[in-house]
Length: 74
Image (cartoon, rainbow, N blue to C red; front, side, top):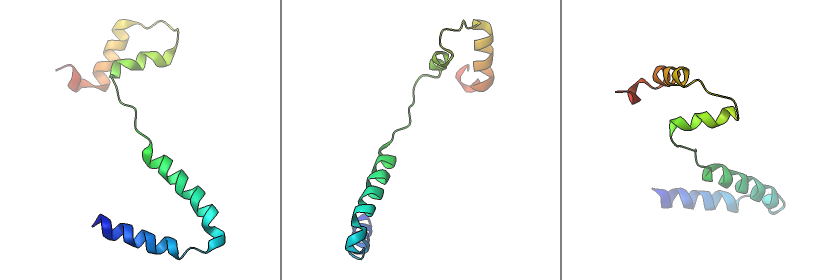
């Protein structure tokens, strides 16, 4: 299936007028970057870092964490 799609893409690229190739290349590079982006995943406890130097009330933090992620406390 992917080889057929690749062939279709090649055929479509061949149809692009020569003067439009630089624009197409820029668009292609932007698409490549978009597909290459990875979603950052990590420990949910790392949310603490977004508040900078502010003090965190531990009981309130734990309560909020339990309400947002109840499956983690089981």
